[in-house]
Amino acid sequence: MFKSDKCVYKQDLIAVIALAILAVIFILVPPLNETPLRIVFALPLIFFIPGYAFIAMMFPKGDISNIERFTLSIASSIAITVFDGFALSQTEWLFRPYSISISLLIITVIFAVLAYPARRRHLEEDQFTFSVHGFIESIRSDDENVPEKNRIPPEIEKALIIALVASIIIAAGMLVYAKTTQEEEQFTALYMLGPEGMAENYPTNAFLEEPITVTVGIENYEKQDVNYILQMQLDGEVLQTLNVTLSDEEKWEEELTYHPEQMRMGRSKLEYALFKEEVSLNPYSSVNLQITHEYPMEYPQELTEGEVNGSIDPLHVLKNYDMEQNTSWNFKTTDANFSGAYVKEEGIFESQGFVFKLPYEGNLPHYNGQYYEMAQNVRSDKMETVVLSLFVKDTYKPRIIDIDQTQFKQILINNILVWETAVGGDYNWQRVHIPVILNEGNNIITLRTIQRGNKDVHPVEIIWDEVTILPISELSPYSENALLELHPPRSEMIPLPTTVNTADFEVEWNGTDIGSGIDYYLVEYSIDGENWQTWLAESKETSATFTGVNGNDYYFRTRARDAVGNWERLHDTPDTKTTVDIEFPDFVNIT
Image: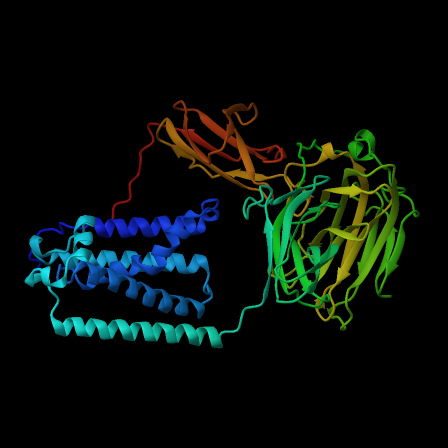
């Protein structure tokens, strides 16, 4: 049980915590850690503050003199710092200014907090209190002048002396052991800084023709000269290689810039890989950014056969872009079983299209990357961002949804993969609509089908048609795997009962859309099933209360619009019908 209601004398405990916090700030926080005050605050943190808090916890009463308390505080601080530093050296944080200062602050706070209830257990007149004047007087006075009740018993004094000597011997021994047995650490530091020169606010979006710049730094602590090789890689592809030679404790920093040269699917890994002396399979160290390639977007127009064939002017007209001739494309395959041909009535508008035929069924041999491709050269007068637009579909419909994807449709620009999707999605016709960069001079556009080796594959035909290059303004605001959505949404009314016995009744509907999702519904009603009136023009809900007139028949139909502007085909017949008959009884099931 506490003998006092409160701890009266706690100012010294608050002071040591405040001093410890200030010491950490002046040791770690720039620019304060570059001033002489760093030493002024660091020395008390190491040689006095944690020991004072410890002695305050061990001796909550004024039963030892101030000079004894001061001496024990210094000795305890030295022991605590040595033990703490040795423990830290065995951890991942090691013995560093950050780790030792933070840990000493934590130790000080713990001891000071424990000292508070220890003092509170004693009467006010017995609690230890510290004053500068009293401390100076205790130094000037002889031990005989100390009141009897404040004198430390001889046996305790002897024990304290023994403990003090033992702690100093142990601490010194541990320091010598650590110094003689611990090898000096050798390492290289690799780091990356954002635009403000700090390790934060790194760029995450790459815009075509707009570079990403970060600062990469290397610091050599290897105790010898080292030849470093630094590579900038994008998804494993080496974009730039730098050779850097540093002496021991020498530092190198440089701004490195990534220039997006082609649109890529999904997130990309921009990595800065560091090697020592020579490039190996695994880098010595690396830092990376996860970036997404972005591009300006505008809403697409509805597409008709006439627009494909000319009302949207292509910037570069590919020869035989509509596959109506049997010329202009170059073909290449790695497997004689693959074949391709122009086939009439296979195109998107029942015109001619080009068909890749993959007849193999079963497990492929262990060949890698079997493919069939067609390619054509395009020349550009300048480097520019354009939209590559084409139509493609495949004939394979998987029996199960979660199939092992082994066959793929691909598009490459100048041998860079810019689009890929698996065969077997039952997509019908897809319009691929992706931004690409054409280099000044010749560019190669490649349409490819590839099969993974040593995997089960299925017979399939892939049809390509209407390959055009359009202005960047034709880019769609919605893209999933770079496919512009052509399939309209679907909707339906929930069937109403034949008769309702109230003028106000609930009408419900729902819909589905593969892709961008339904934006809103147009809900119409009619009293004769032929002349329709708008009830809800842009409803984002799937139910509403309709108010009718007794005796009238009411017909309903709905039409959905998706997020990219595709309208569902207008329903020729009503979705549901009911009659308002207020006299009609409302039957209730009785159980």
